[in-house]
Length: 188
Image (cartoon, rainbow, N blue to C red; front, side):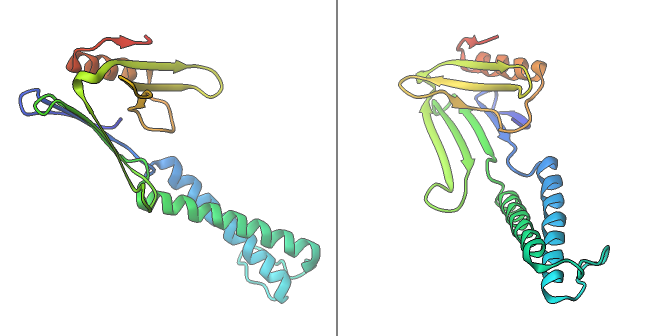
């Protein structure tokens, strides 16, 4: 969860959620673009017999099998890069969590990919919220997330996907939300 704002005399708690526009995604999209275009140009250089690269000369490579392999890697790398750039342009996964005591509603909103599920919006009654659940898994691939336990529904994730937040931040956000909603905090 990103920044939190408490408005209208403690009646509304709104938490912004960061989507795909993270430094790590920009970094990997840039690396994939450079690598994909480099391999693509190297493969095309071997096919046309003309150097299309600035840093090296790949005209001496045989097109079959080396040039074909380079073209394949270039297309694959460029496809991955295109996917990452598109995901960041659309800011997939961004949104907000809004807890409104005045209207008695909890709204979880996220942006998705274009199509019928571009806008993902879950609306529940505050009275149906049973608890705020913290899930902590340590190890090689740590996971630290907050979930909203709602009657007759699956647990709803409240934190962003990707890099886990610190334990102290998770505890503070979970405790603040549980206190605001008047429900227990589970899992800590």
